[in-house]
Image (cartoon, one colour):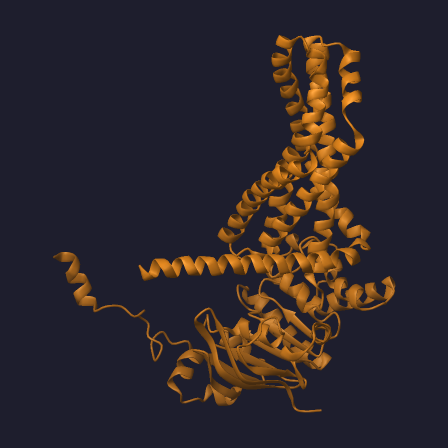
Length: 258
Length: 267
């Protein structure tokens, strides 16, 4: 009995400690961002790894999601004789929800996990210690440029996801299901508002980017310097950031569209 | 200038509930090669991290050239670290930079030297470790011994006053070992360094060390000249230095009675 109580206590202490460490880590990281912005070369290189290398998966996924949306939407709308608004439906679903959320989930799996694994390995091969021993701060040198790259990459990728989705929806609806071409675009133009939909979509992506960046980097530094530790941290990154993205999405949606 | 470069006073350190150092005091003389030896798991690497201020002791203090490492502000600590070089067991080269850029990194970050001067300095450091020809390679293309030599060149890039070697001989073939042994001694004498070599490769390190410290079970077992160490009558030190299989450190891991355990399976 006592050991169970002790276990609960120990878990609680571990949880609060890790929260405190995460908070402290985030503060240090955010503090280092402005000076790291000046090192353009470094974050540009990271932007290539986080952004350019995620292009394919994001674009292909966006394309298919858009096609599926158009297909499913058409099947319902056809019974109301309202198939012209399939464009509006695809565009709004993508911009408001699926673009930022699915892109963030894919990004967490593709770039977030890669970041964690990279940092975990740098830690286990003592590269981070070596930087400290040279009198260089790894937060400034290693973490901040990667964080900046994530912040820049995800909003752009999410926007691209939505664009590809609309394109996929168009291909299914107009040539495929013979929805009127002009009506498809006119409905999108009439219903999508810049402030409410596009800007909010970008805000969502930016919040998700901060979340994924912090989780991935923190898991990387916290990883036990063993093969098992790095693999567990990588899994944690994907699980934690996915859940946080979905939870935050609900909060943001409630704030933005009510 | 005091004869003592690093003065460890009454140092205790524990990790979780395990006490790693129990009120250890030792001095590391200036300008000499000091060997710190002990069996695996005695916290030799931890001692280096304590000296460099990467870990904080639970008790006691570490004075490096008169400065209390753990009382320094972060900026001062980073400045002190520019006077220290550390050779990590794994080399710890940054894997995304070439050999040249790895060595140039501390110079580019901490000095305002023009690129031409940095190039000259990097090539000089590489020449000193015999790897000038490898300057364009990536760390993944180097053998274990080579990456340790590159790391050594990086560790001395800023012309530090002291250099710490963490298990420099581990996993080296005889030639690589011979090269490293010679490099440690030559660099120490040529650059007027204070070298600290943490290792359990007793034979290799005792050929170049001036001063030796033996750690075990969180305490200093012996500290003195290499001759004194070799002549030590202490049975534990004797077993360690000559690598005997049985002695005060038993060959058998503690276990229940052998006969009883065998018979228990029969019944």
